[in-house]
Image (cartoon, rainbow, N blue to C red; front, side):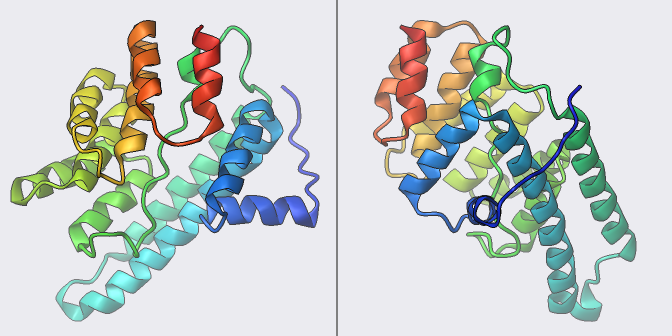
Length: 237
């Protein structure tokens, strides 16, 4: 296994920081993702920075929620330790996996699949403590816990946000078929902010299941100009 030797220039580090912080203009982000697909070293650096940012977000989340809830609902100190430990383990796992990259023998699903990073906490779109708590679990890669929280919330009122992230939790747990059923619900809502993402992950699931023609058809439904779509279509032809 090759050693990881980060040799980033200040400009490259700034570019990665803007990407993981979601401060990069859309077209630049598209180009950056395209570069990641062909540059394993860049992809590895981005993964590390995402894990470190997740750890920072979790710490900020717990502190802000403890202040907001006050004495009526304090967050146990042990959860800080769990969050920090999980984040550290995640970073170590990324380091241990460096150098593997994407080989020619890996299928297209593996080559193009990136787990959705989730929404920022505590500034998620729902302003719901329970949803945010589920997002914390999701970012900790405790997908079963996140799914349980969000599934309960769906009983109180369904939204495309909940449907999409339950689908992502299932997909990250290896439950592709169940995830696909939920993504189909969003595909019926072209106005949803998750519509394009639902198409993308549906196409990847179809690839995973060997349904190449269906995957092509799904990719052709996408309206955005992400070059990944065209690249994947070209490889399927």
